[in-house]
Image 1 (cartoon, rainbow, N blue to C red):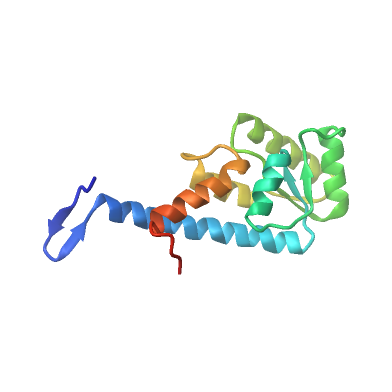
Image 2 (image 1 turned 45 degrees about the vertical axis):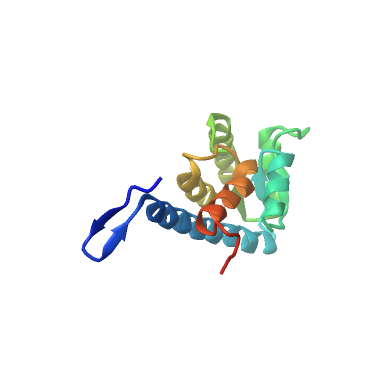
Length: 158
């Protein structure tokens, strides 16, 4: 469906706007993923909720010391302690739903109380870019694939 309007020499359409928004979001998400890859290579632990989150992040090429919160025999403070002992910086990348927000807030406080830096900036930026579309980390690969299809419908890239 094209909502094209001609203004002089310029042609604006709904598809062009969708392309531009998807292209910008895809670039920004890739920047965040590159930052996660960098921190992962530096040994900075990444706190996530569960196995599906780890699988999604590995699918996106992120190799890191993932510490899963759900399904762990440890309580939240012990998980924060484990992460804080392994690095002066800990990335918190919980889901973007109510439970994920509560976990992030609690883990951040505990990690800070233990003398490490709880980094939630990447989570905030990814959440800001995707909150209308996804609510969890495990959905990131599918969302990125959709953006790539919006930008490159014929499947070709760069």
